[in-house]
Length: 224
Length: 386
Image (cartoon, rainbow over the protein chains, first blue to last red):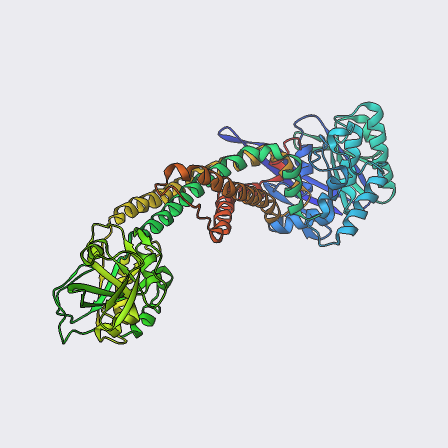
């Protein structure tokens, strides 16, 4: 479970500061599929990065399963992300010189697991997203949809407690977007907690709860 | 897969990105290796030349008050109370710290004799050592090897009316003149050389040595140092270092060595800056990639490790190729710079590893700050799309 209390984030701007978040209280239960929506500049991406342990808030707290996320030091936070979080980025962000299998193995590299185990876990994750047989391909030899699926496999290979996704279909056509969202739905049905940021209302229908942000505040929090 | 595998994959699958850095570092090391190898090879060349020039250390009895006329000391006539050196000094000379630098030890016994009614200076020598010491000698006849072989200076041969192959009576002994020295223009032209033991018997100086000439190679230490070391083991002897003309040449080589080391320092500094700039550019270019590593749980140390492994490998590769390139360049340039006409490339494999590792170390040092910066990169800042 994720719980935030009075979460605020200010960014420096010129001589002053601009508030990206202005006191967000949010709870995401284990197994929930929450979709965060809002206009550009509403603070949804900032919220995702803070929930994902990648950006210290200006004030407020984030607690994940009784762990105060920002009470951890830098290495502790990195370890926490490695063990509990998975990330899917808008632009896939695959490492161009690594094969699909190697990209999926990336989150496992710092973990003390046997090499064969890492390899089998990565192959299993690729098979889960329908890319069995394409383990040796470089990202440049894959379609956008395939790259997105590799990114999803990379995000779930360490069996994270929470999967964060930032505009996962932002660079895909509608047919491929549906396939990718179908994958998210399957993961959710298997019990995966998902927090997804999107501005595409069509993606919202796959979630069970929608949080709408405006000017750094929660405008609407409704079950779908 | 471990984090360092990422570095290996990056270098093996995108070699072009580090190619120019590798070439630049290799050329830098090659320049240093070529200069140092050249200066070392030229020093060895000069040392060999010095060996051919003869002795550079002279050992005589400390209280010898006779005026001898050989080897820089004058010999008027033989005195009854003349002191000689004990043969054990030959063994003691070989115990000095720089004994590896001793090329030739040539003991001699001197004495005046009358042959065919003429007064001559008899010199007892170890012919093998003597011929090695005086490579400029040209013999008419065959090299003396037998215990009754003698060698006669050209002037002495004329005065005595003797040629190679003739026999010569000296005291109660008979010698075969195996060879006559061609004119040397030195005092050697007037001398009669016989085996050391025979001369000791004729002059009544059994087991004694009048003086010892030593040819030392100067590369490992200055001649004056070696003379000091010999003095320390032979307290009763006077040890003189003979200044050689080639010392001037050695000083020039020394300057070249110092220049090489200075160049090495400058090149190391340039390499440091080059690697720093390249790795900083590399880190900035791979900001998103580093952001991904950080986001998915790589610690600062993991990311630093990736960058440093890349830098270290580039350094090792540059070091290895640069060392070989430097040797090749030195081999090509040495014949043009040597004056002996028969130079040998002095390859010191024991310095290969330190040279290669030093490039890797420079590379690692220069990459440390960029690696640290990459390791501390905020994932949210790196991934601008988030």
